[in-house]
Each structure stands twice: as structure tokens, then as C-alpha cells.
Image: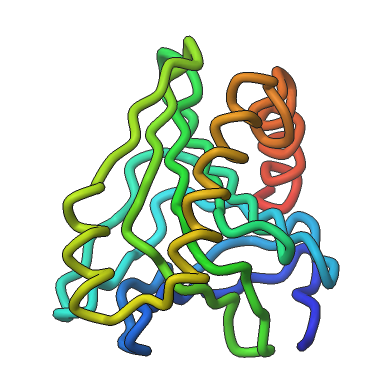
Length: 176
């Protein structure tokens, strides 16, 4: 497994458990790249869905991926504060082509006041049956939902008060 190079662009590829591509983010600037942690930044990047439709992100975002946790976190910088979109997913791999992970449907949306909603439980249950998620994966994912909620409540990692601001400033230095 390679390591993304700081300051360089990378693609992000999201897959489903059955191996099919789910979504591709065209360009994210690597702000930190190690074997275990990748932090990236993007703004108005093109996103391609599995059916070929494309859209463009609306605001700057800082993306957090860790090789030990079954989630990734996107902090979206808006006028009224930072909103977080957290994907319950496999840990990432970076193969030189792109940062890749498996999206497991469950998501947590976190608001600037740190209240949050667990989303897509029905989609998770449907896909769990359709794609035969192993019982061990189901247990890991549910444990990581709990871990992610702990991080939100404890303001840990990307939820720490200055985290997004610090990494957004770093992102801006690459954009100049």
C-alpha cells in the first residue's frame, strides 16, 4: 500500500460491499499522508455517481480517513459553521491510483452544535441482506458507530474545536 504525497491531488473511490463502484471524488488535495492517516481538502470538486451522473460539491471540505477505524469523516465548511458527514466504511487503502474504501450505508450527520442524526439504517439493513454482510462485519460496523458517537460527544479527532480550521488553512496554502 502506497502513501499519498502531501500537496498532491488524489481521487477518492467509494465502493459497495459487492465490489461495485459507488462514487468517485475527482480531486482532493492531500494535506497529510501516512500509512495510517490521510487528511485531504477539496472545494467544488466533481463527484461521479455509479450511474454516471455527476455533481459538484458546494463548499470547502476537510476529509479524514484512518486505517484503523471503520468510518471516515468529512467536515464541510459553511457560513453558519462546520457540518460533518460521517460514513461508516471499511478502513481506507491507497493503491497509488486512489484512496479507496467500502461504504457500508450507515451515516451520521453532525451539526455545528454537535447534535447528530444516524441516517440510512433502512438502506443498511436492505444491503446487509442483499449483499450478505458477514456477521463479523455487522458487529464491527455497529461497534464503530458507537466509537464515532463517542468521538462526537468527546470532541475527539476531526470534531475537536480547531481541527477543521487548522487543516483548512493548510489546504488554502496549497490553493494559492
